[in-house]
Length: 81
Image (cartoon, rainbow, N blue to C red):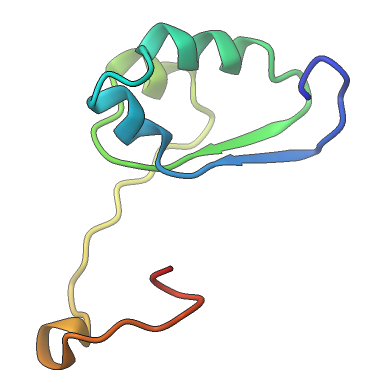
């Protein structure tokens, strides 16, 4: 997909968990990022390695401050899943 320049944006949701649980290596992700060209890539998950952060254009750490789950134990389609 990246080699054929088929997308302007690629979202790899929870890929950092795949690295954390050793389904992929950090080197696999870095190799993919090296091939991104003009494609923007969004990686989500937790605990990115220092080398992934170094290669990133933007790195954000999000933290829950308040969530209705704490009181209702329910989720909302389209937001949590």
